[in-house]
Amino acid sequence: DAGVTQSPTHLIKTRGQQVTLRCSPKSGHDTVSWYQQALGQGPQFIFQYYEEEERQRGNFPDRFSGHQFPNYSSELNVNALLLGDSALYLCASSNPLGNEQFFGPGTRLTVL
Amino acid sequence: RKEVEQDPGPFNVPEGATVAFNCTYSNSASQSFFWYRQDCRKEPKLLMSVYSSGNEDGRFTAQLNRASQYISLLIRDSKLSDSATYLCVVNLGGFKTIFGAGTRLFVKA
Image (cartoon, rainbow over the protein chains, first blue to last red):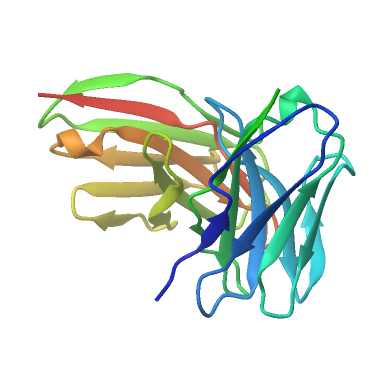
């Protein structure tokens, strides 16, 4: 049973560029949440997708957008990258109740 | 005030020690509570859920005090492998999950 997978594992971009991160949820899970974790901080909730729609959003600007596909996989897009966007981006999947979340290994984004 | 607050530590304890972490949350409507463990440069992993009646899993005991809005985690007989960051997590009704910044634990031989 595959757990949550994310790609790529590492990414280096320059300011102003755009990036797309990908996530495949754990088998049997249909809800995907995205988090940003800066160094020394806890994960910060970006948004959650369920039934291909954004169900809830944290305090992140519109530069952060996402998508969920019919197979429940998801993408996180960040436009106009800033240096402060450098972080570990974590994807977590859960069942419809959403109480227990399983995290992927994350994508480490560096913006230069 | 942060929605979920934890003492960042670090807590430096010898093997075999008992150590306790506390966490406070600000939203009284919070519905479910968890402790996650995160190893250096790895993803968080669920350690245990926290119930009002308190719950125990081996050497780990979690407690919830809704009146005072705090959660605790007690680790008995600490092992070297317990060294990690412990994240307090509060769920606001399924959609939104708030993580604390974490408490770092170092267990030394």
